[in-house]
Length: 137
Image (cartoon, rainbow, N blue to C red; front, side):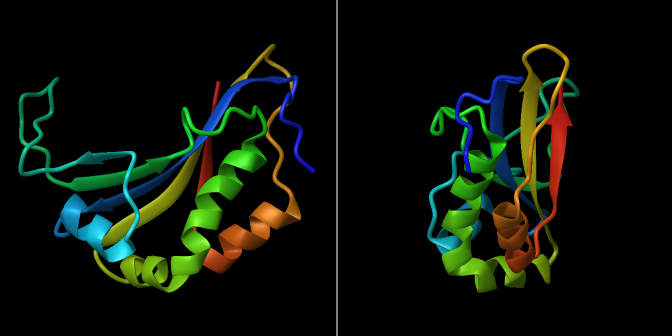
């Protein structure tokens, strides 16, 4: 199913993004029992460009630098497979003041082609009740 050398793709990776005004990144980590790839803690971080306080916390789990495949399906599966065992926790977070989605960066090798989603990925995302969006270059 996977095409790890997906010849129309230069680079791809997928990131689970969780944003909350009230839950700290540490609260999210403890609740999910998964270590994030990166966090933004509003109690510590400042917007470098604006010099203002950030008004939200963020928690990220990414396939970047972990999965080397150029097939976005493998990256989506990496994230989805980590979340499926805790899908009720994910769904519970979405019922709170938390925004959750999956972002997929996809950079074309030549300006042609595009990412593919198979029924397997669509089924996993539906089970998790998560949206995915693509940032395509």
